[in-house]
Length: 424
Image (cartoon, rainbow, N blue to C red; front, side, top):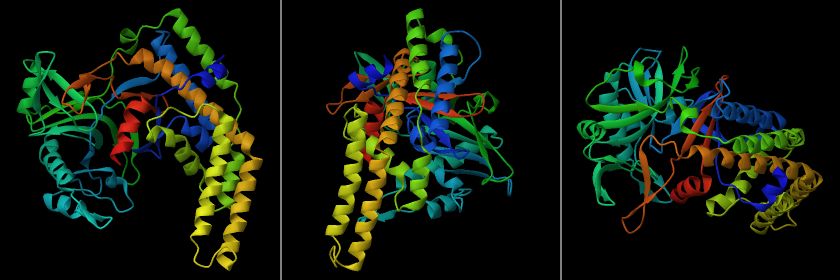
């Protein structure tokens, strides 16, 4: 039944896993099938069962937090090396950490850059980090925390929706609104900066720090200059109602996903022996229709065949562009690599199809959860239309954190990922 559904419908949702102990880049849950094979699939299945248990009210399970569409991601806290307060972006975990402990650091670490012969203005980012450095240090942060910046002074605006007035802010794609006459709006207007925290880090050095999700902001000191919250949802089962039919359908789908067997070992060998990063290539191939605003490719056989053809065509383009032509030494080497890669992929076409079946299976179950969880809202959310009107939208998504610290995000990929891809 599940695999029949996969071939009939296009499912759109996103779950992303934390990588490398730092919440600086999160991979889609379905991409763990490409990255980790059977182990990745079992990781997803275990989280799905735990989430179903808490939504069913059947006991303890993973924690759930709201995914805020903030930007940029801000890291703030104490550098264990010298005890100084700093703020930064994802660069804090770079090989050479970009820790901003002064306004001069911000200017030095985040200059304007050249791209395609044009200057990319980074003054907006510098302004956000400057406000973060000035005001977040008053919160009494211990260790390091990560949050999504919602606004700084001047970003808030007043809008009218259906005759009612709201305070609104649009940090990225979604516009969030709160009633203008509410206590929340008053606190926001009085603040210099707004942020939602979701992750904390511990370790003896910046390089060795590990992430813990579901940060509790109650431990921070309240100041009028900073409006902040954390992303935790305190009563998930009380806000999501599953019927016995809902639970049975989801459980059956997970059971069928559990029966799928995939073999990623062959691709690990390929990655080592040939000049191609298969994981990166498969992820890009699967993401291509999302970037185009379309649904997922539904046919695993077509997915595999199109992928092999895409790789073949890429080598053909490279060969056509060689100054010495196909007959020269470079051309002959390139032809040999092309043949080796394509032959290997054809030999493993069935494995690609199996992996993609699992990928689609994960997507289908995500949508079953997403349809039930989308009514959970921390703040009303809209997407502003070209004519200035506002269209109601679901929250960007949710982050599911299991007892082992693995994090998974549930997001509507067509609505949000495609919109974010369009900004690139």
